[in-house]
Amino acid sequence: MTWTARDQAYWEELMKWEQSLTDYEGNDFQNTYVKWLNSAFSAIPEDVQAPFFQQLDQLLFNLHSLLQGSGFQTEARERILTSARIFHEDIQTIADMKKLRVDQLNYLNRQQASRHRLYSFIQGGLTGTSGFVPVASDFLVMAIINLRAVQQTAMSYGYDVQIPFEMMTSLKVFHASVLPNRLQADGWQNLLLELEEHDQLYFYNGEEQLTDPTWLEEPMKQIMKLMAINAFKNKKMSNLPLMSMAVGSGINYRLTKKVTQYAEKYYQYRYLNEKKTKSD
Image (cartoon, rainbow, N blue to C red):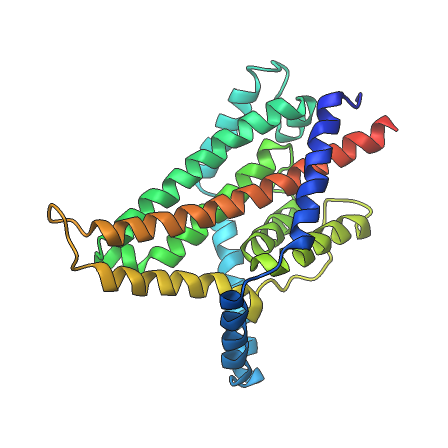
């Protein structure tokens, strides 16, 4: 595998992005919100918090397993491989995706990412209509959309999420991508540290806990989104609550954009780092 000028360009862009995570500083409103949230969680006894986060982790594990065995995931896998064969006819498995150049992988992944951003946009619009089913299922549907987005990003770069290590890693990437911006640099470093600590990347034997109070900042924003939708639901144009629909679509789209960009950088890093190591 020869290290190319395009590989170097992507690598330099990754390093700039990594530095931007470290340089991030929140504004006064965000800092106040964080203090309020920390204060609220500190008032909850530890023996109440622990079972809650265990159940939340279990929900994410179950969703991941459900998606892996679904027909949608099988179709997505075949769609990715079929698209990849346009560039390289010998591709038969997800691992074969690494035979492609970084520009080709980036192109294929962007197709998957744009599809999931559209799903989120539509889901947000439906939630904005204030219908009972879209509102009640909003958190679950958004979790599914974004988990699928991470899984398909992994596959687009040649990492099969049916392998135990990759399954757990995709959950960790999802977790890190949803962290508040001020903590994403720590999440990124933890992901890279886990890569260094694992000699073989098949079985996973690291920390399996995912969620904690800091991770809940994004779900809390989703609750605030529902409150905003409820506040604007009676402001209608052409018999549609357009303001509520715009709020729902915009917030959902931004969340999935944040998740897909973070996942793209992580799997891009792994692909390029492996290639760089082999070419040295």
